Length: 534
Image (cartoon, rainbow, N blue to C red; front, side, top):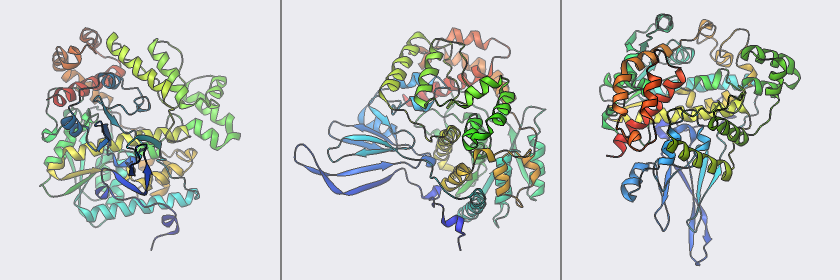
Protein backbone atom coordinates (compact mmCIF):
# COMPACT_ATOMS: atom_id res chain seq x y z
CA UNK A 1 0.00 0.00 0.00
CA UNK A 2 1.31 3.47 -0.87
CA UNK A 3 2.04 5.88 1.95
CA UNK A 4 0.20 9.17 2.25
CA UNK A 5 3.31 10.97 0.99
CA UNK A 6 3.48 8.82 -2.12
CA UNK A 7 -0.21 9.34 -2.88
CA UNK A 8 0.33 13.09 -2.64
CA UNK A 9 2.95 13.02 -5.36
CA UNK A 10 2.58 12.57 -9.13
CA UNK A 11 3.68 9.34 -10.73
CA UNK A 12 6.24 9.47 -13.49
CA UNK A 13 6.50 6.91 -16.29
CA UNK A 14 9.81 5.06 -16.15
CA UNK A 15 12.40 5.93 -18.77
CA UNK A 16 11.69 2.73 -20.69
CA UNK A 17 8.05 3.77 -21.01
CA UNK A 18 8.73 7.32 -22.17
CA UNK A 19 8.25 8.12 -25.82
CA UNK A 20 9.81 10.82 -27.94
CA UNK A 21 6.72 12.99 -27.58
CA UNK A 22 3.37 12.94 -25.82
CA UNK A 23 0.78 14.04 -28.34
CA UNK A 24 -2.69 15.17 -27.29
CA UNK A 25 -5.23 15.97 -29.97
CA UNK A 26 -8.16 18.05 -28.84
CA UNK A 27 -11.54 16.83 -29.95
CA UNK A 28 -12.87 20.19 -31.13
CA UNK A 29 -12.21 21.47 -34.61
CA UNK A 30 -11.01 24.98 -35.50
CA UNK A 31 -12.21 27.16 -38.34
CA UNK A 32 -9.61 28.54 -40.75
CA UNK A 33 -9.93 31.55 -43.04
CA UNK A 34 -10.60 29.29 -46.00
CA UNK A 35 -13.53 27.67 -44.23
CA UNK A 36 -11.81 24.34 -43.60
CA UNK A 37 -11.81 22.69 -40.20
CA UNK A 38 -8.91 20.68 -38.84
CA UNK A 39 -7.91 19.31 -35.46
CA UNK A 40 -5.61 21.15 -33.11
CA UNK A 41 -2.38 19.41 -32.04
CA UNK A 42 -0.40 19.94 -28.86
CA UNK A 43 3.04 18.36 -28.51
CA UNK A 44 5.06 18.33 -25.31
CA UNK A 45 8.33 16.62 -24.34
CA UNK A 46 8.90 15.70 -20.67
CA UNK A 47 11.98 17.74 -19.76
CA UNK A 48 13.70 14.96 -17.83
CA UNK A 49 13.29 12.42 -20.62
CA UNK A 50 16.17 14.07 -22.45
CA UNK A 51 14.31 13.67 -25.72
CA UNK A 52 14.21 16.39 -28.38
CA UNK A 53 11.49 17.75 -30.63
CA UNK A 54 12.08 19.49 -33.97
CA UNK A 55 9.76 20.94 -36.56
CA UNK A 56 9.98 22.60 -39.95
CA UNK A 57 7.50 24.16 -42.35
CA UNK A 58 7.25 22.30 -45.65
CA UNK A 59 5.19 25.07 -47.24
CA UNK A 60 1.81 23.60 -46.40
CA UNK A 61 2.03 22.51 -42.78
CA UNK A 62 4.55 21.98 -39.98
CA UNK A 63 6.39 18.65 -40.04
CA UNK A 64 7.33 17.35 -36.58
CA UNK A 65 10.11 14.87 -35.74
CA UNK A 66 12.25 13.76 -32.82
CA UNK A 67 15.26 13.92 -35.19
CA UNK A 68 16.56 17.03 -36.94
CA UNK A 69 18.79 14.81 -39.08
CA UNK A 70 15.77 13.03 -40.53
CA UNK A 71 14.19 16.38 -41.38
CA UNK A 72 17.46 17.47 -42.99
CA UNK A 73 17.54 14.37 -45.18
CA UNK A 74 13.98 14.86 -46.37
CA UNK A 75 13.98 18.66 -46.66
CA UNK A 76 17.59 19.32 -47.78
CA UNK A 77 18.39 21.98 -45.19
CA UNK A 78 21.80 23.69 -44.85
CA UNK A 79 23.82 24.37 -41.70
CA UNK A 80 22.81 27.31 -39.52
CA UNK A 81 26.11 29.12 -38.88
CA UNK A 82 24.50 31.68 -36.56
CA UNK A 83 23.48 28.88 -34.23
CA UNK A 84 26.87 27.18 -34.56
CA UNK A 85 28.63 30.43 -33.61
CA UNK A 86 26.54 30.53 -30.43
CA UNK A 87 27.60 26.99 -29.63
CA UNK A 88 31.26 28.05 -29.51
CA UNK A 89 30.58 30.05 -26.33
CA UNK A 90 30.32 27.50 -23.47
CA UNK A 91 29.06 30.07 -20.97
CA UNK A 92 26.18 31.24 -23.17
CA UNK A 93 22.94 30.09 -21.49
CA UNK A 94 20.54 28.01 -23.56
CA UNK A 95 17.87 30.63 -22.82
CA UNK A 96 19.52 32.83 -25.47
CA UNK A 97 19.35 30.19 -28.19
CA UNK A 98 15.60 30.37 -28.64
CA UNK A 99 14.31 27.62 -30.92
CA UNK A 100 17.17 27.78 -33.42
CA UNK A 101 18.66 24.42 -34.39
CA UNK A 102 21.93 23.66 -36.18
CA UNK A 103 20.02 23.63 -39.49
CA UNK A 104 18.36 26.53 -41.28
CA UNK A 105 14.61 26.27 -41.34
CA UNK A 106 14.47 23.61 -38.64
CA UNK A 107 13.26 24.63 -35.20
CA UNK A 108 14.21 22.97 -31.92
CA UNK A 109 11.47 23.20 -29.30
CA UNK A 110 13.08 24.71 -26.18
CA UNK A 111 13.15 22.96 -22.81
CA UNK A 112 9.90 23.09 -20.85
CA UNK A 113 7.96 24.39 -23.84
CA UNK A 114 4.80 23.09 -25.48
CA UNK A 115 4.35 23.29 -29.23
CA UNK A 116 0.81 24.12 -30.37
CA UNK A 117 -0.30 23.70 -33.97
CA UNK A 118 -3.71 25.22 -34.48
CA UNK A 119 -6.37 24.12 -36.90
CA UNK A 120 -4.91 26.39 -39.58
CA UNK A 121 -1.50 24.70 -39.20
CA UNK A 122 0.06 27.73 -37.48
CA UNK A 123 2.64 26.85 -34.77
CA UNK A 124 3.11 28.70 -31.50
CA UNK A 125 4.78 28.04 -28.12
CA UNK A 126 3.63 28.17 -24.53
CA UNK A 127 5.74 27.61 -21.44
CA UNK A 128 5.13 24.56 -19.27
CA UNK A 129 6.08 24.19 -15.63
CA UNK A 130 8.86 21.61 -15.19
CA UNK A 131 8.39 21.50 -11.42
CA UNK A 132 5.20 20.61 -9.60
CA UNK A 133 4.64 22.59 -6.43
CA UNK A 134 3.97 20.19 -3.57
CA UNK A 135 2.56 21.62 -0.37
CA UNK A 136 3.83 18.93 1.97
CA UNK A 137 6.01 19.37 5.02
CA UNK A 138 9.77 18.96 4.73
CA UNK A 139 9.62 15.66 6.63
CA UNK A 140 6.90 14.32 4.36
CA UNK A 141 8.98 15.23 1.29
CA UNK A 142 12.06 13.54 2.78
CA UNK A 143 10.03 10.39 3.46
CA UNK A 144 8.66 10.45 -0.08
CA UNK A 145 12.22 10.77 -1.43
CA UNK A 146 13.26 7.63 0.40
CA UNK A 147 10.17 5.76 -0.79
CA UNK A 148 10.65 6.80 -4.40
CA UNK A 149 14.37 5.95 -4.39
CA UNK A 150 13.51 2.47 -3.14
CA UNK A 151 10.73 2.04 -5.71
CA UNK A 152 13.11 2.96 -8.55
CA UNK A 153 15.79 0.56 -7.30
CA UNK A 154 13.35 -2.34 -7.07
CA UNK A 155 11.68 -1.61 -10.40
CA UNK A 156 14.90 -1.17 -12.37
CA UNK A 157 16.44 -4.26 -10.78
CA UNK A 158 13.49 -6.34 -11.93
CA UNK A 159 13.58 -4.79 -15.39
CA UNK A 160 17.16 -5.75 -16.34
CA UNK A 161 20.61 -6.53 -14.90
CA UNK A 162 22.08 -3.51 -13.12
CA UNK A 163 25.52 -1.91 -12.94
CA UNK A 164 26.24 1.16 -10.82
CA UNK A 165 28.83 3.92 -10.88
CA UNK A 166 30.85 4.11 -7.68
CA UNK A 167 33.01 7.17 -8.21
CA UNK A 168 33.62 7.69 -4.51
CA UNK A 169 31.34 10.71 -4.36
CA UNK A 170 28.15 11.12 -2.35
CA UNK A 171 25.58 10.68 -5.14
CA UNK A 172 26.96 7.45 -6.57
CA UNK A 173 27.57 6.12 -3.06
CA UNK A 174 23.96 6.77 -2.07
CA UNK A 175 22.79 5.01 -5.24
CA UNK A 176 25.02 2.00 -4.55
CA UNK A 177 23.70 1.62 -0.99
CA UNK A 178 20.04 1.87 -2.07
CA UNK A 179 20.42 -0.57 -4.98
CA UNK A 180 22.40 -3.02 -2.82
CA UNK A 181 19.24 -3.58 -0.77
CA UNK A 182 17.47 -5.12 -3.76
CA UNK A 183 17.69 -8.82 -4.40
CA UNK A 184 19.33 -8.40 -7.79
CA UNK A 185 23.04 -8.92 -8.32
CA UNK A 186 24.78 -5.81 -9.59
CA UNK A 187 28.22 -4.81 -10.83
CA UNK A 188 30.11 -1.81 -9.44
CA UNK A 189 32.29 0.23 -11.83
CA UNK A 190 34.93 2.83 -11.01
CA UNK A 191 37.39 5.02 -12.90
CA UNK A 192 40.67 5.64 -11.09
CA UNK A 193 41.52 9.34 -10.55
CA UNK A 194 44.80 10.52 -12.08
CA UNK A 195 45.50 13.05 -9.32
CA UNK A 196 47.47 11.46 -6.45
CA UNK A 197 45.74 13.90 -4.07
CA UNK A 198 42.28 12.70 -5.12
CA UNK A 199 41.05 10.08 -2.63
CA UNK A 200 37.92 9.00 -4.52
CA UNK A 201 39.38 5.52 -5.13
CA UNK A 202 39.80 4.90 -1.41
CA UNK A 203 36.21 5.89 -0.78
CA UNK A 204 34.99 3.73 -3.66
CA UNK A 205 36.81 0.67 -2.29
CA UNK A 206 35.36 1.33 1.15
CA UNK A 207 31.81 1.61 -0.21
CA UNK A 208 32.14 -1.62 -2.21
CA UNK A 209 33.53 -3.42 0.84
CA UNK A 210 30.69 -2.11 3.01
CA UNK A 211 28.00 -3.46 0.69
CA UNK A 212 29.98 -6.67 0.11
CA UNK A 213 30.33 -6.40 -3.64
CA UNK A 214 33.43 -6.40 -5.82
CA UNK A 215 34.56 -3.18 -7.47
CA UNK A 216 35.72 -3.27 -11.11
CA UNK A 217 38.22 -0.58 -12.07
CA UNK A 218 37.86 0.52 -15.68
CA UNK A 219 41.12 2.38 -16.12
CA UNK A 220 42.20 5.93 -15.38
CA UNK A 221 39.93 8.96 -15.82
CA UNK A 222 42.17 10.68 -18.40
CA UNK A 223 42.41 7.49 -20.47
CA UNK A 224 38.69 7.59 -21.25
CA UNK A 225 38.58 11.35 -21.83
CA UNK A 226 37.87 12.28 -25.46
CA UNK A 227 37.21 15.96 -24.77
CA UNK A 228 39.79 17.16 -27.29
CA UNK A 229 39.12 14.62 -30.04
CA UNK A 230 37.84 15.69 -33.45
CA UNK A 231 38.73 12.77 -35.69
CA UNK A 232 37.33 9.77 -33.79
CA UNK A 233 34.12 8.11 -34.91
CA UNK A 234 31.22 8.30 -32.49
CA UNK A 235 30.39 5.08 -30.61
CA UNK A 236 28.92 2.42 -32.92
CA UNK A 237 29.25 4.84 -35.82
CA UNK A 238 26.17 6.70 -34.58
CA UNK A 239 25.58 10.29 -35.66
CA UNK A 240 24.23 12.47 -32.81
CA UNK A 241 21.63 15.15 -33.40
CA UNK A 242 24.00 17.78 -32.00
CA UNK A 243 27.57 17.95 -30.63
CA UNK A 244 27.99 15.81 -27.52
CA UNK A 245 29.35 17.35 -24.34
CA UNK A 246 29.98 14.20 -22.33
CA UNK A 247 33.08 13.16 -24.27
CA UNK A 248 35.08 13.37 -21.04
CA UNK A 249 33.34 10.12 -19.99
CA UNK A 250 32.81 8.70 -23.47
CA UNK A 251 35.63 6.20 -23.06
CA UNK A 252 34.32 5.13 -19.66
CA UNK A 253 30.83 4.53 -21.04
CA UNK A 254 32.32 2.63 -23.98
CA UNK A 255 34.17 0.28 -21.65
CA UNK A 256 30.98 -0.36 -19.66
CA UNK A 257 29.09 -1.12 -22.87
CA UNK A 258 31.83 -3.52 -24.01
CA UNK A 259 31.45 -5.54 -20.81
CA UNK A 260 27.83 -6.36 -21.67
CA UNK A 261 26.76 -9.55 -23.40
CA UNK A 262 24.14 -7.96 -25.66
CA UNK A 263 21.19 -8.58 -23.36
CA UNK A 264 19.29 -5.60 -21.93
CA UNK A 265 21.31 -3.86 -19.24
CA UNK A 266 20.80 -0.70 -17.14
CA UNK A 267 23.76 1.33 -15.95
CA UNK A 268 22.93 3.69 -13.07
CA UNK A 269 24.81 6.97 -12.68
CA UNK A 270 24.74 9.81 -10.16
CA UNK A 271 23.84 12.47 -12.73
CA UNK A 272 21.74 15.23 -11.17
CA UNK A 273 22.58 14.62 -7.51
CA UNK A 274 24.37 17.93 -7.07
CA UNK A 275 21.48 19.84 -8.59
CA UNK A 276 18.96 18.26 -6.22
CA UNK A 277 20.90 18.29 -2.98
CA UNK A 278 24.07 20.44 -3.03
CA UNK A 279 24.46 24.19 -2.61
CA UNK A 280 24.13 26.14 -5.85
CA UNK A 281 25.54 29.56 -6.79
CA UNK A 282 22.23 31.26 -5.99
CA UNK A 283 21.56 29.32 -2.75
CA UNK A 284 22.15 32.36 -0.52
CA UNK A 285 19.70 34.41 -2.62
CA UNK A 286 17.06 31.69 -2.22
CA UNK A 287 17.74 31.22 1.50
CA UNK A 288 17.16 34.92 2.12
CA UNK A 289 13.73 34.69 0.50
CA UNK A 290 12.88 31.66 2.62
CA UNK A 291 14.01 33.47 5.79
CA UNK A 292 13.91 37.25 5.18
CA UNK A 293 14.57 38.06 8.85
CA UNK A 294 17.94 36.30 8.69
CA UNK A 295 19.44 38.77 6.25
CA UNK A 296 22.39 39.60 8.51
CA UNK A 297 23.44 35.96 9.02
CA UNK A 298 22.90 35.11 5.34
CA UNK A 299 24.88 38.14 4.17
CA UNK A 300 27.68 37.37 6.62
CA UNK A 301 28.14 33.84 5.26
CA UNK A 302 27.82 35.05 1.66
CA UNK A 303 30.42 37.79 2.16
CA UNK A 304 32.82 35.27 3.70
CA UNK A 305 32.29 32.75 0.89
CA UNK A 306 32.97 35.30 -1.85
CA UNK A 307 35.32 37.63 0.06
CA UNK A 308 33.34 40.84 -0.26
CA UNK A 309 32.09 43.57 2.04
CA UNK A 310 28.84 43.22 3.93
CA UNK A 311 27.45 46.17 1.98
CA UNK A 312 28.17 44.44 -1.34
CA UNK A 313 26.78 41.14 -0.02
CA UNK A 314 23.47 42.73 0.99
CA UNK A 315 23.30 44.55 -2.35
CA UNK A 316 23.70 41.21 -4.18
CA UNK A 317 21.21 39.33 -2.04
CA UNK A 318 18.37 41.86 -2.33
CA UNK A 319 18.80 42.14 -6.10
CA UNK A 320 15.65 41.29 -8.07
CA UNK A 321 16.87 41.70 -11.65
CA UNK A 322 14.89 39.55 -14.07
CA UNK A 323 16.52 36.75 -16.05
CA UNK A 324 16.11 38.60 -19.35
CA UNK A 325 17.63 41.83 -18.01
CA UNK A 326 20.53 39.97 -16.43
CA UNK A 327 21.30 38.07 -19.64
CA UNK A 328 21.16 41.30 -21.65
CA UNK A 329 23.54 43.04 -19.27
CA UNK A 330 25.90 40.07 -19.03
CA UNK A 331 26.10 39.65 -22.81
CA UNK A 332 26.83 43.33 -23.42
CA UNK A 333 29.53 43.26 -20.73
CA UNK A 334 31.08 40.20 -22.41
CA UNK A 335 31.01 41.86 -25.83
CA UNK A 336 32.92 44.92 -24.68
CA UNK A 337 35.27 42.76 -22.55
CA UNK A 338 34.47 44.87 -19.52
CA UNK A 339 35.87 44.00 -16.11
CA UNK A 340 32.57 44.98 -14.51
CA UNK A 341 31.70 42.67 -11.65
CA UNK A 342 29.04 39.97 -12.09
CA UNK A 343 27.35 38.99 -8.84
CA UNK A 344 27.81 35.32 -7.84
CA UNK A 345 24.16 34.78 -6.86
CA UNK A 346 22.67 35.82 -10.19
CA UNK A 347 20.60 33.66 -12.52
CA UNK A 348 23.61 32.37 -14.47
CA UNK A 349 27.38 32.51 -14.48
CA UNK A 350 29.00 35.42 -16.29
CA UNK A 351 29.17 35.12 -20.08
CA UNK A 352 32.68 34.98 -21.51
CA UNK A 353 33.26 35.18 -25.27
CA UNK A 354 36.40 33.24 -26.25
CA UNK A 355 39.27 35.42 -27.47
CA UNK A 356 39.87 33.18 -30.46
CA UNK A 357 36.47 33.81 -32.07
CA UNK A 358 36.86 35.78 -35.29
CA UNK A 359 35.09 39.02 -36.11
CA UNK A 360 32.73 37.02 -38.34
CA UNK A 361 31.79 34.71 -35.47
CA UNK A 362 31.30 37.69 -33.16
CA UNK A 363 29.03 39.41 -35.67
CA UNK A 364 26.92 36.27 -36.07
CA UNK A 365 26.78 35.89 -32.30
CA UNK A 366 25.80 39.51 -31.77
CA UNK A 367 22.99 39.54 -34.33
CA UNK A 368 21.37 36.32 -33.11
CA UNK A 369 21.63 37.06 -29.38
CA UNK A 370 20.45 40.67 -29.67
CA UNK A 371 17.53 39.55 -31.82
CA UNK A 372 16.58 37.03 -29.16
CA UNK A 373 16.88 39.60 -26.35
CA UNK A 374 14.83 42.21 -28.21
CA UNK A 375 12.06 40.03 -29.58
CA UNK A 376 11.57 37.21 -27.09
CA UNK A 377 10.23 37.27 -23.54
CA UNK A 378 12.88 35.16 -21.81
CA UNK A 379 11.45 33.53 -18.69
CA UNK A 380 13.19 31.33 -16.09
CA UNK A 381 12.31 27.68 -15.52
CA UNK A 382 11.33 28.68 -11.97
CA UNK A 383 10.95 32.08 -10.28
CA UNK A 384 13.47 31.01 -7.63
CA UNK A 385 17.05 31.39 -8.89
CA UNK A 386 18.42 28.23 -7.25
CA UNK A 387 15.61 26.08 -8.57
CA UNK A 388 15.99 27.63 -12.01
CA UNK A 389 19.70 26.76 -11.96
CA UNK A 390 18.94 23.21 -10.83
CA UNK A 391 16.29 22.62 -13.52
CA UNK A 392 18.46 24.19 -16.21
CA UNK A 393 21.34 21.84 -15.38
CA UNK A 394 19.09 18.80 -14.92
CA UNK A 395 17.72 19.26 -18.45
CA UNK A 396 21.28 19.20 -19.81
CA UNK A 397 22.18 16.10 -17.80
CA UNK A 398 19.01 14.30 -18.94
CA UNK A 399 19.88 15.09 -22.55
CA UNK A 400 23.40 13.67 -22.06
CA UNK A 401 22.12 10.35 -20.70
CA UNK A 402 19.54 10.16 -23.47
CA UNK A 403 22.26 10.70 -26.08
CA UNK A 404 24.47 8.06 -24.46
CA UNK A 405 21.63 5.53 -24.43
CA UNK A 406 20.94 6.18 -28.12
CA UNK A 407 24.60 5.79 -29.07
CA UNK A 408 25.06 2.58 -27.15
CA UNK A 409 21.69 1.12 -28.15
CA UNK A 410 23.39 -1.60 -30.26
CA UNK A 411 24.89 -2.95 -27.00
CA UNK A 412 21.39 -2.93 -25.46
CA UNK A 413 22.49 -0.69 -22.59
CA UNK A 414 20.48 2.16 -21.09
CA UNK A 415 22.04 4.90 -18.95
CA UNK A 416 19.85 6.24 -16.15
CA UNK A 417 19.97 8.21 -12.94
CA UNK A 418 17.47 8.17 -10.08
CA UNK A 419 18.15 11.87 -9.62
CA UNK A 420 16.57 12.55 -13.03
CA UNK A 421 13.28 10.91 -12.08
CA UNK A 422 10.45 13.45 -12.08
CA UNK A 423 9.09 12.47 -8.66
CA UNK A 424 12.57 12.64 -7.11
CA UNK A 425 13.04 16.08 -8.65
CA UNK A 426 9.65 17.33 -7.47
CA UNK A 427 10.32 16.14 -3.92
CA UNK A 428 13.90 17.41 -3.70
CA UNK A 429 13.27 20.83 -5.22
CA UNK A 430 10.23 21.44 -3.03
CA UNK A 431 12.31 21.08 0.13
CA UNK A 432 13.78 24.37 1.42
CA UNK A 433 17.07 25.40 -0.18
CA UNK A 434 18.22 26.34 3.32
CA UNK A 435 17.91 22.67 4.38
CA UNK A 436 20.65 21.47 2.01
CA UNK A 437 23.61 21.96 4.35
CA UNK A 438 23.20 21.51 8.09
CA UNK A 439 25.66 20.95 10.92
CA UNK A 440 28.56 19.95 8.72
CA UNK A 441 26.46 17.56 6.63
CA UNK A 442 26.98 17.71 2.88
CA UNK A 443 23.64 17.18 1.09
CA UNK A 444 21.71 17.05 4.34
CA UNK A 445 18.32 16.40 2.67
CA UNK A 446 19.66 13.28 0.95
CA UNK A 447 21.22 12.19 4.23
CA UNK A 448 17.90 12.52 6.03
CA UNK A 449 16.15 10.56 3.27
CA UNK A 450 18.68 7.71 3.40
CA UNK A 451 19.30 7.61 7.14
CA UNK A 452 19.69 3.97 8.07
CA UNK A 453 20.58 3.01 4.48
CA UNK A 454 23.70 5.02 3.66
CA UNK A 455 26.29 5.75 6.38
CA UNK A 456 26.68 9.26 7.74
CA UNK A 457 30.41 9.28 6.90
CA UNK A 458 29.82 9.75 3.16
CA UNK A 459 27.84 12.92 3.92
CA UNK A 460 30.56 14.32 6.16
CA UNK A 461 33.44 13.98 3.72
CA UNK A 462 35.28 17.30 3.97
CA UNK A 463 36.72 17.32 0.43
CA UNK A 464 35.23 16.36 -2.91
CA UNK A 465 37.26 14.64 -5.61
CA UNK A 466 38.41 17.12 -8.24
CA UNK A 467 39.08 15.98 -11.81
CA UNK A 468 40.67 19.15 -13.21
CA UNK A 469 44.02 17.32 -13.00
CA UNK A 470 42.66 14.69 -15.38
CA UNK A 471 41.34 17.36 -17.75
CA UNK A 472 44.77 19.01 -17.94
CA UNK A 473 46.38 15.62 -18.46
CA UNK A 474 43.99 14.84 -21.33
CA UNK A 475 44.71 18.29 -22.79
CA UNK A 476 48.48 17.84 -22.78
CA UNK A 477 48.12 14.41 -24.37
CA UNK A 478 45.79 15.61 -27.12
CA UNK A 479 46.58 19.25 -27.85
CA UNK A 480 49.16 18.76 -30.63
CA UNK A 481 46.87 16.49 -32.62
CA UNK A 482 43.89 18.77 -31.95
CA UNK A 483 45.71 21.91 -33.09
CA UNK A 484 46.87 20.17 -36.25
CA UNK A 485 43.33 18.92 -36.95
CA UNK A 486 41.82 22.41 -36.56
CA UNK A 487 44.02 23.87 -39.31
CA UNK A 488 41.90 23.75 -42.44
CA UNK A 489 39.03 22.21 -40.48
CA UNK A 490 35.41 23.18 -40.98
CA UNK A 491 35.37 25.92 -38.33
CA UNK A 492 38.62 27.33 -39.71
CA UNK A 493 37.42 27.20 -43.32
CA UNK A 494 34.16 28.87 -42.33
CA UNK A 495 36.15 31.65 -40.66
CA UNK A 496 34.70 31.24 -37.17
CA UNK A 497 37.89 30.49 -35.21
CA UNK A 498 41.34 32.08 -35.26
CA UNK A 499 43.69 29.08 -35.16
CA UNK A 500 46.88 31.19 -34.58
CA UNK A 501 45.16 32.77 -31.55
CA UNK A 502 44.31 29.31 -30.25
CA UNK A 503 47.92 28.25 -30.73
CA UNK A 504 49.17 31.23 -28.73
CA UNK A 505 46.94 30.36 -25.78
CA UNK A 506 47.74 26.66 -26.12
CA UNK A 507 51.47 27.36 -25.94
CA UNK A 508 51.17 28.25 -22.26
CA UNK A 509 52.34 25.38 -20.05
CA UNK A 510 49.28 25.72 -17.80
CA UNK A 511 46.48 27.62 -19.58
CA UNK A 512 43.49 28.85 -17.60
CA UNK A 513 40.88 26.12 -17.17
CA UNK A 514 38.31 28.38 -18.88
CA UNK A 515 40.39 28.03 -22.05
CA UNK A 516 40.24 24.23 -21.71
CA UNK A 517 36.44 24.38 -21.42
CA UNK A 518 36.36 26.53 -24.56
CA UNK A 519 38.58 24.05 -26.41
CA UNK A 520 36.34 21.19 -25.32
CA UNK A 521 33.50 23.05 -27.01
CA UNK A 522 35.52 23.76 -30.18
CA UNK A 523 36.54 20.10 -30.43
CA UNK A 524 32.97 18.88 -29.88
CA UNK A 525 31.52 21.20 -32.53
CA UNK A 526 34.28 20.49 -35.08
CA UNK A 527 33.88 16.74 -34.54
CA UNK A 528 30.12 16.93 -35.05
CA UNK A 529 30.41 19.11 -38.16
CA UNK A 530 32.74 16.60 -39.81
CA UNK A 531 30.17 13.82 -39.46
CA UNK A 532 26.99 15.85 -39.85
CA UNK A 533 28.10 17.14 -43.24
CA UNK A 534 28.71 13.65 -44.66
